[in-house]
Length: 627
Image 1 (tube, helix red, strand yellow):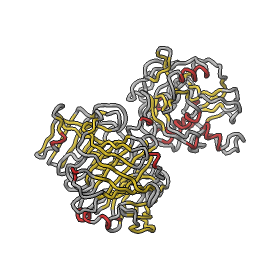
Image 2 (image 1 turned 120 degrees about the vertical axis):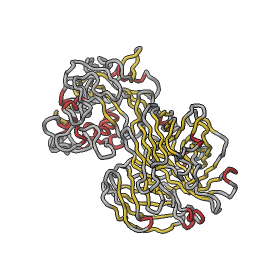
Image 3 (image 1 turned 60 degrees about the vertical axis):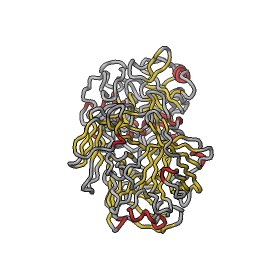
Image 4 (image 1 turned 180 degrees about the vertical axis):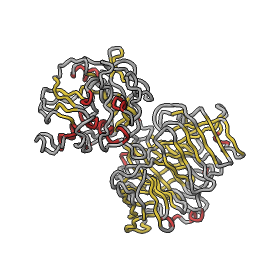
């Protein structure tokens, strides 16, 4: 049986990978952040008592989300693969590819038989329909793919993670069987659920909050799951993807690949990278994947063929099935699997994502934010990580310097646009998109990242930034590891400490960090406002159903309120959401609060009482960029 190595992807600084069901299991951990720039961190890998590698140099980040883990020494009698040793740098190197739902790394030892599959273990937030694909087979099953199902459709219940299989199909799209088979799944806990039964109905699930993830069966198969989307060929046209290709039961077959699609979005040319860091492509092989049918047998599934090169023998085309999903910040992900009818050909698996697509690139010190159609933002956008600072007469997103204040709304808009095509002042809908991400962002254990004690319950509240008038002015920013910079609240990074209210940074659902989205300086909004929107008051205690004020409806809540309901937070920090000066119609809006607004400051704080020509030393601005 294939050994499937599956683990939990910890969103903290350390990732730990292990397979507790394998007596020869090995674990790997490293201190590299899963997002962000190049950095340093500890690295440790252990194959029980046989192999240990340790390194303190950490990791290097490429322009995409390939991560290079490296080390110079190891312990034990069994060395890592010789092909992992870089003669120039004199160190062992391992690449991993983060595609959010799944992290794939090649085996560190030649005796390991397939990559490691890692998912972020968040329980599904809501019920979802997912497609899944079988990517591992037992050795005996490689001889007859038509008797081995490849594609599947299932539904996942929110919060519990319970899964019901609704269809299974072979690589040609023929139904293996259809129906409704509920898995005997226990309650989902931190993204992990177990199923009991026989054969492939006995296994472990690892989920993402959107329903994506990996299922490890006790018989040795790995099922990748992605939330269902309909596949449009045009969406894949003329793109450059990056990914990993491997043979599931071949020991040294992992390749880092570049995938380029043609003008139709149906033909994908696959070549190996000779250097991922430089983007150089080698000439070892050229595979061609051709999609014959999209959305067959189910939405988000693709059936096609793949032509192998002489490197793997000329045994005929590989029948291949794929599932596709569009990630909100990284574009399309595709997972394919298949096998030639020839018995001598091993299973073929490939995972790729369009990390290299320039449409998802943000300028330096800007953060990519996913669209939120509910509040009116239909496309992803980039937001300045910091409040704008003046640099040679232009606004700059940088930590140094105090916010650029005392500009009118009109001037702030023009200054953002002077940065070039695609730049503008943030709109109110974009502000709401970011504020609601701050509101709901959670870690792998369900702890709320921006709330005191990691909880939305009771009197807990979102931090409201520099808002205690100590010191009595705006502040420059610092590194993300120093969110208390300039304040007199040295314990603000501790969400169990009273100083937490003054923490200046927030983490989005992408795990990116944004500074001073509440407190420090108020910020201009691009939109004009000519109609009073409600009664002045703390935003957390508003019901938004028209009963407290006929203007405060569900539609108004989309403009100014959080996604959740917090009416019980009628004292203390008022949920940290801020105060709404909504009973004004003077034409302009500022949001976020400033350095001495205390509990009135917050990520949802709004003041509709400004004129567009106002010049105020408490008001700065923040630019956005639209790719």
